[in-house]
Length: 492
Image (cartoon, rainbow, N blue to C red):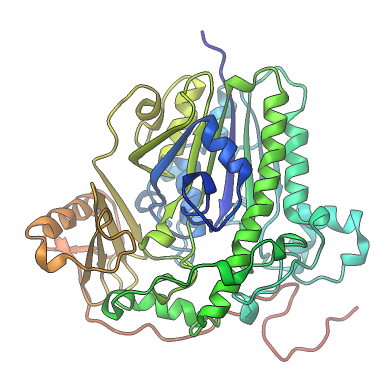
């Protein structure tokens, strides 16, 4: 029997696909992600099938699409995920004899949901109560190591009206959550244990607030950054939900100079993570079984960063739903490959279980078979966001060079040829003949196989609702008992 590999999953939060220098990103420096590209396979058409934190993470942990986990947004809670989908990935691998450890951001609901990790330590963005905040593993480490920072309300940077304002981290790099997370991961990688490990390392950044620590805050000159890509207003504004999201975090009117500042600091955050990943790679490569360690790097979703006039995520434009995905296993996968096949976060459950000995794909595609054995790639990839049957619902179907987007709010449709139009600036629906109907049918097929409270289809077609703008509201994201502006100092 082959020796089961160590499996190391490394995840970032809100990192766009076009942020790795070796894959053509001219405005960022990523020497260690470039090392990982050279060590294995870069999947150049990888997606999250629900472009927001909680659904993406449940798809990863279950191998099931959001339409099955019941998580289709952060705002409409799902339920009974493991009952719907089966044991989580860490539980599955622990039963196969793996030592499992998970560190960093998990963003499950409830926040402390057991996921099967034998070692499970948290660093979350926000906690609902002060007691939860004080129980955060990173916060405890920070306070023990540097009690002078105990006054911080938000250890990762200011949120709310500062969400998309360029910042510097309130703690130095050596005391950052990235430093804590990397140090703990190194301890686990180097732990003496006869069992193979499954490690999950989940960074909070480059998710806003965009606040890299010194000196990463000044690595990139804003004047060298590209301006956001804007297209036909009828395309950019077709999804009114993006206008609501901009308003929600005070990002409804960010000018290009500030957008370039934000991009510079966003890339600075990625450069810091890249340094941390270099330390992880050094540790893996120093071990005697380095060639039998499977490493997978990916993100949960991207960030518009002003493209299409949008900020945040939760859309099916490439900037939000396409993700970086690198897979390295020197004993099994040839180095330095680029693979254009469609892939999704849902496939990573099957990647890990296949590598561990017995494939369990669930809703995923056989990623290892595609990369190692030349098996066929997915023909179609379907993504969904929002509660089906409501104005929030939208979906994407990728097929070949084509991407189709359906918006229930107004029954609006977008169709892009990504080969000819990678910036998604030309809507081809009116000139593509039967193709939109064919791709719509693929979404209808998936919806028909799921059990939703509200009907998502009517007479075999996607359900459209009369267009209505989403009411503009603000999201106030404070911490440690503060709920709104105007509140005085916290009591001692």
